[in-house]
Amino acid sequence: MPGTDRRTWIEHLSPAVCWQLMASTPVGRVGVLHDGGPEIYPVNHVVDGHSIVFRTDPGGKLHALHRSPAVCFQVDAVDPATETGWSVLLKGTGTEVADQASLERFAQLDLRYWELGPKEHWVRIVPFEVTGRRLWAAPARTSVPGGGAG
Image (tube, rainbow, N blue to C red; front, side, top):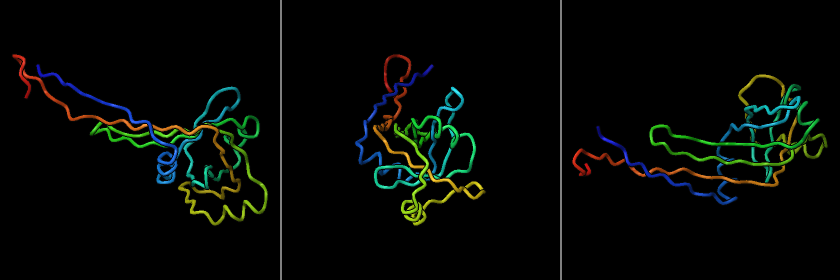
């Protein structure tokens, strides 16, 4: 039976590449602590300088941020056919933004959200750590009986 000799490697991404990837991806996931346990929510976001901004309605994630502002935020992309992909993880502090100057500036950002609703609350995540990696795969080699490679 033929076997597969796969070689993969991980490329650690620079912070600049991480920010480019976050800016190029309209949906990320924010992880919060809600009622003593972790919860993850998909959100449409934009990069604003070196922070992440999103809008939300009242509910679980906003309640969780008010109680515990420590968050993580992830964006990624995978290609199952080639078994490759990348992932960026941001760890930081999420806070609801209420000052008028920031809200007026945020309103000018190109934030498009997919879910219906007014999304009246703006949240900013300021990171203390940004890491990313890309998984590469070499083409598979199939071995044939008798020790030869095909």
